[in-house]
Length: 87
Image (cartoon, rainbow, N blue to C red; front, top):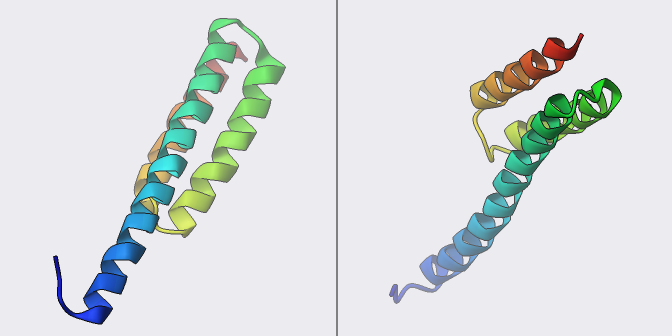
């Protein structure tokens, strides 16, 4: 454990950010899973709505630095490919 006051604060901040980032990454996986479930059920409108939500969250996560922008783009492309299967 650090003895320096500022380093103790950085440790606390990093832990809060780690927990917050973990929750966001978990939510992203869930949103992509919802798209996949709708595609398997052949529910086009449900899949499109779930994809729209996933796009928004992926963009926000990339903007905040939780995931890399290229990873967000790759995931969005994968989601769109799933939705396009139904059309």
